[in-house]
Length: 162
Image (cartoon, rainbow, N blue to C red; front, top):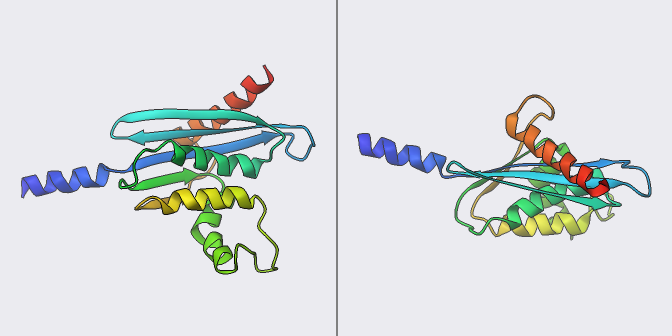
């Protein structure tokens, strides 16, 4: 009984957790700066990724954070949970993408989704994994790792203009 409990407990902990966030300063301006940050965790190890980008949008940075985090993972057989404060990303991956794909990557109005290249890349990376879930976390609510991902995105923007 005891050994079964330990095995079950270890199995539950065998998950890669990602907190991803992106941002953009001057989002509606022609020249702006954006950044993304991601915190990857697995069995007590933590990796932090971030990068600044010029002339982008907030939504592009939110998607890019998830893409870059998944690209940094060298395995496909460990379940992944991605936490994001972006309803755009979470809703997109949990419901919109499936509908767009059925319609040839078109929305209900027949138009292509914005940031289609990023959506396709994210979908491709998710399909390479055995299990990948997108979970919504409330932004700026004290969640330690979501706050860290946000700090990394801001650090990337700060370093871009420094």
